[in-house]
Image 1 (spheres, protein in one colour):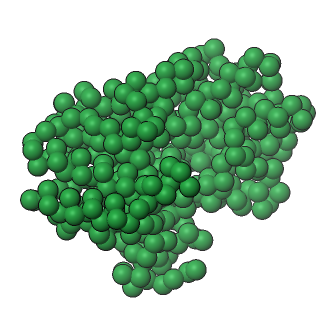
Image 2 (tube, protein in one colour):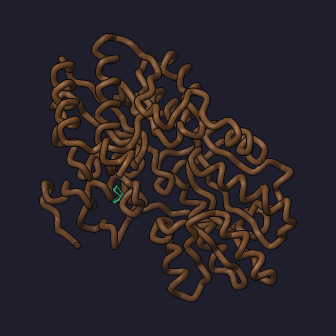
Length: 370
Ligand code: SF4
């Protein structure tokens, strides 16, 4: 298959690993921001091929994992109300809230529907004018254009029984928070290629300069990931700190300007809480005042939400690259994909799920649920 097989060729993979080994002279800690990249490293066994000097740490780039507990609880409260059709991406169903999850709401008779495109929600709203249709709009810059289009079209088409529970987050403020932390160990970043396809990488240039860290835009196939790592290591070894693009077939510096303009028309920046991490200034997007009618938090009475996070789960530390999933005492025992204590064990981009799924559990001697 074109654009996949070329980037999985074993000879190329081994050549890049050899180049990495020949380049590296000392230990470096590099963070892949995106959970999709974490899964790709594990799935293809690349982590086992890397020179021992490279320590990969996993970043907060999993949209399901960082959706704040308060919004999960609000989603559960809305979905539980009679007359509501609650639409969401499938990953969100098993994410634990304080006392329940959307899957249990659905099992108890709630009308919770999995959608594959946000625009399906408008069709559902048109078909059920007597019901309230709510979409759980989560994600990074990747999903923001589609969700912005959803609200834009709802307004254009005067659809009044539709609203959105918004939990959008942005990557650059998260990088700033990680690098500003006194406990930071990250010396270089692999930036998420799909986010940069939308936003470009011009926003990262002042960050690389300010914190003196290399940031390399990287794709998701084995050759992409190893090329990204090699470029980051070359910079680190040479004392450079620039933004480089290892994903040129998809990403341009300026990004997708029409998508950025659409986002800016519908959303405005806001402070946003990240699950397990806390509030990061300017790290979210919320609906602009002219789209406030589509804000589900205004449409539904949600004042009595009392959040209660698991006392065991250390996913906040995992998401900041400060702990590995297997360092969590619940990993693979109390916490498994079927009985998750944290979102990082549920999401298809979660770091705990990656370690569980791709064999790290065996190394740690924990039970296999599969
Ligand atoms: S293994 Fe489970 S409890 Fe531990 S950090 Fe991951 S999600 Fe949280």
